[in-house]
Amino acid sequence: LQGAMEVPVDGREDVARKHFSSLAGKFDEETLEYVTMSAASILQDASDAKSAFEELEETLQPHLEEAGVGDIATFVKNLCASVWPEKKNAKPSKASLKADSENRPPKGSGYPKAKAKVPTANNDETEEDDIICRITNLILMYGGSQKPLLNKTNFELLRGHRYGVVGQNGAGKTTLMSRIAQGGMQGMGK
Image 1: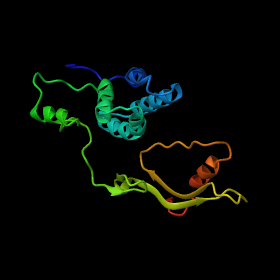
Image 2: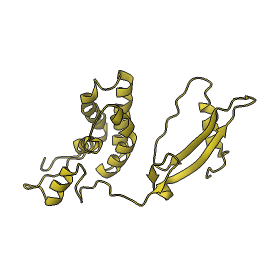
Image 3: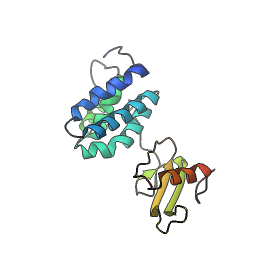
């Protein structure tokens, strides 16, 4: 790959499709398309391997775990390397060999390092500055309904993340999004 070039933005969907084709039997057709297009979107928006790696790993982890991918970091790293090929030296460094044996990217590879973290509502950890909104035990009611749409829900939005709201008709998707847009939820920054 000496001198290999970055894949242009308009070619990144094809890279994602090729990479995820190996998981065709592990997902139903709709889920595979969703995961592939999520990855393609992240790859198209990212300017470098480091930022793409972070977002891809976080976004895809639950889906890849469900598909039985054992080494998610390597799977994501290989996807990033398909878009942003690393220049290969004639001889791998000791750091690179050690990182490979530990299934993590080598130092200086442009992939993220651990950052100072704080616990989040779902017991994961994230940087405190990245939290846009954190509401614990959220209760969301609709109009005159006696039944809450959300009850005892931990709600958290993190900067730079993408979210989707999925549910049946009448489940409260529009109500939730309207309340968020209005900033009408206690604990929500303006």
